[in-house]
Length: 339
Image: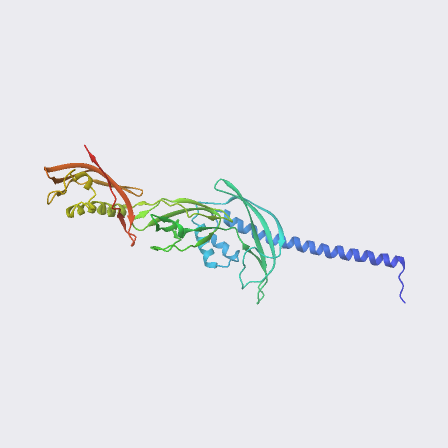
C-alpha cells in the first residue's frame, strides 16, 4: 500500500494550485487576446462609419449581414450622407452566448463579444451596442476572423413618403431609394447606418422637393416617413397653368363647372343669354404655391341680360394628381371680383 508523507501531500497541493493558476492565467490571457482582436475590428468598423473620407465599401469585409444587397445600398447611401457620427467611444465588452440578430446561415461562429458604443449625431448624444462574432475558419486554410453581426443600424420606410396621397420618388443624394413611378404603397423599412441623409422627393418631372435632412439613429426607425414638400418644377408650372386656364373652357358649355359662375350669374334670372361667355380680355397670371394654384390680374368679358360686361378677378384652387401621376387642378375654385 502506498502512503503519503505530510511533506509529499503538501508538495502535491502546491503543484495543483500552481497548475490551476497556470490554467487560469492561460484562460485569462486567451480571453484578453480574444477581446483585443474583437476590439480592433470594432474600432475599424466605427472608424469607417465616422470618417467622411473613408470608403463605405470597407464595411463589406467587416459586416456579416443577412442581406448583402441591402447593406451594399446602405453603404452607397452612407457615401451621400451630409454628416456622420462623431465623438465615438467604444466601451467595455462582455462575452455573450448569442448575437441579438440573425446571423448568416453559411457562417459558423465560435463566440460573440458585445460592446457598448457612444456617439454624437445631429446635436445629440446616443448610446447603443454592437455585437461581433468570431467566425470559424473555413476549409482551405481560411483563418477565423471577427465580423460585426449586430451593427449600428436604424431604418427608414422611404415608400411611406407621399404628397397629395401620391407616393413620392425619393432619392438620397443621387441614389434612388424607391421604385420610380409606383402608384401603391408597400411598407419597406430600409436599414441604414446612423448618419444624417439629404433626402429629396418628387413626382417626376412635375414636382421636386428641396433636400430634407433625415436623421437616422441606431436602434430606431424614422416614423412616420420624412415629410418631403415638393414644389412645382418648370414642367409642373407649365402643366398646371394649362390645366387652370383650360378649366375656364367649361364656361362655354354652361355654368355647372365654370370657375367664375358665381360672378356672372345674375341674381333673379333663370339663365344667361345664349353665347354669354366671351372669354378673357386679360389672361390671368398663374402661380403655384405649395399645393395651391393662384390666378391674379385676370379679366373676362361676358354677355349679361342687360348687355356686355367686363370683370376683373383673382382666384385659387388646389393641385391634384391624376391616377397617371400627372398634375391637374381641382374643380372647386375660390374666385373674387376685383374693382
